[in-house]
Length: 479
Ligand code: FHN
Image 1 (spheres, rainbow, N blue to C red):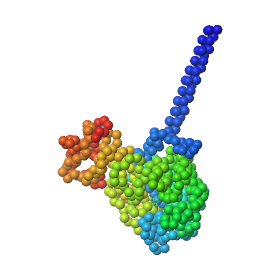
Image 2: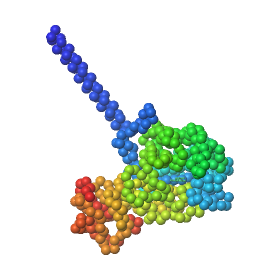
Image 3: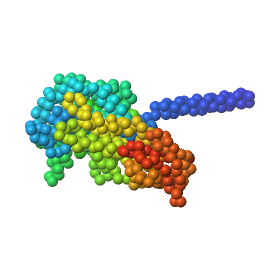
Image 4: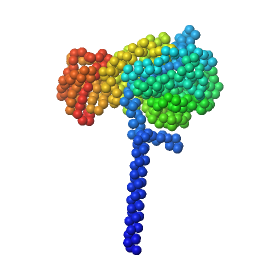
């Protein structure tokens, strides 16, 4: 009897041990699966659940990239700033419809003139790649409401409304896959001047606003906005995330009066369909405490911050003054300025989203091409000092900027010293070596009494836009 009792105890213990071992094993399996997926999920209440590590994994390509191409292309490329012999006063060509209060019916006719037969997706993607850009954000639908992709949600789209009849986003998706760039879509979620229930078109559809006396039209709320969301905006975002393969990010813009719960619907649509896809912060911006609902922040257009910033951010910038193509805009930024913008932004931990506005025939103007090629020449030599770098450990330097990566500091010299000596800020670490990134030539250096590093540099700069000097140090950076 006693033996039986002892045996059954053993059996119970064995069973217990087995359960524990099996349980632990299955637990490990579950954990392993979650880890392997490496991505967050929407819980039953519509909350996005994600660990810091999962967010870091999702952001990794974007943080590595630092440089992307913005493309504003739509019906406004046909008008190119001019309507019935008059030039737009507002500098953005894509705002022509609102500027001249062009009735929807008349604006729709522009589709007859959009026939970009010279469009070559591979050429565009190669141009971006050669410039050193790692992602492309293209206007799939701007505020005028015209979709530059085939859409079942609205016939006001390039496939159904033009003789062209092709879907340029499909072609771009294939070209991006081929050349290893991330395809990303801009989508104007609130303003849609084609739609009576959306925000923006007060000249054709004056009714349906909740008018608040004394406020600007743009502050007015569309009472039926959710109808537009359900009929067009959400189905189109769904199409974009379903028909074009993996999408790097959705770039929402001008949230206007969108409510937090409406913005959440746009966010969750992305989370549900492509959990790895990123979302910019222009999805929502209301109230005193502008809450950032996206994955990273956008600065204002062409607004490079003055100081180092924390967190992930991106600066969208124009190459001339307009976003969409405009025939009379010749105010091109120089290549030197654009290269320095890229460096300046990277030195503060941001991404540069540099815009081009292709023409209605599908070509990209020579002035844009020349500038992108010049940036590409600089990047070919110096891209190591941009990709995957983090912001400078120092405040802005008088003669240039600094970016950092692992045990290297990249000093971008804008103003080359005339006395052959470049003084860089003090670090406590032992310095392994200093060299010119362009030719790997080592530079002699000494430490001044106050710990600053004095580099002996050649008489002339290698690149007028920016010559990069690498300082390699031992251990963790210690200032
Ligand atoms: O109104 C748009 C403008 O046309 C353009 O698309 C820029 C790009 O950042 N975003 C809005 C203005 O901030």
